[in-house]
Length: 365
Image 1 (cartoon, rainbow, N blue to C red):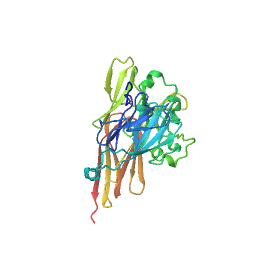
Image 2: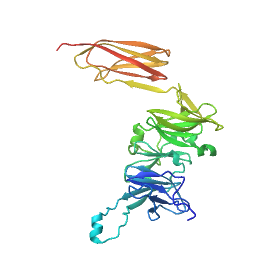
Image 3: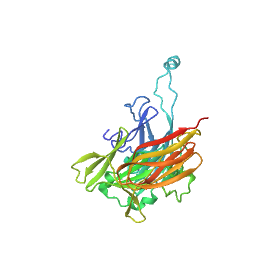
Image 4: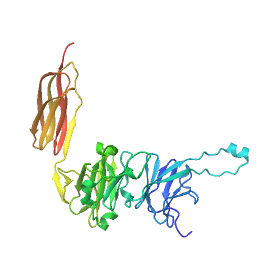
């Protein structure tokens, strides 16, 4: 035929030993699937119609044990039940003609107003899909099986002014990624990072959200060096590298980002520059027979740091000191404390920990 069976633009997904991919020209509302354990075998009858034929699928993804199908303004769930394969012995005994088993499926519409027109932003964060739509919002699909219209939450209320009126060229290059526990959205020379490790993201159903617009999630904003734009994030050897390009598009290069400040969204469309916060805690060191002497911390800090000594019951002492950016040792006397102790360091700005030394004597039983 003169038109394509499979889409050239949509990314295929693998699920239950099959490949699923949206249809091509004039078949954009269908999902085609390969033979079981035969990823290169597709045929016309192995297709599933999804919604209105006038609206094509934009992406497929996975959440829990379901294929999630996106259209620009709609969201669907596809559940698949495999048919039992027929053995050669049964075919011989029944004198039957072999037909490749076809799975049964059920299509359920999750939402008829929210979909995704930016498929490169769809990322699975902790078995929860997160994506950006060009209407200027970041969404997530909450739940594990019984998805309904109320399962879609908007997460970007706090940075809404920054996601509106994105230029056409930037929209063409928008991307999403998972980076060190953050959902990362790249648009032009800006990166927007949402912490997906916090309870506010993990337990959305336990929080009240007006019209499913959840606010209060921690978002951070990084800005590319002058004259450059973010292209992608590459995880290699446990490290995150950013692919950047010059605004003219003539030079691409990999970079690690390091800075002394973060940009965070303010109430206006401007950004507020703040020092990133840090916190470092140890477990309780020693036991009931420990006779603690002192703790020594070797670190490089530039700003105020609070050091808290605690035992298994409560905090014992808190100290503050100001660094000068050089690697130095800070010693805290414990005044012969009996029992194990722990240490918490907290502050803002650059912090490099080199060594932690604990001195104790043992009490004879």
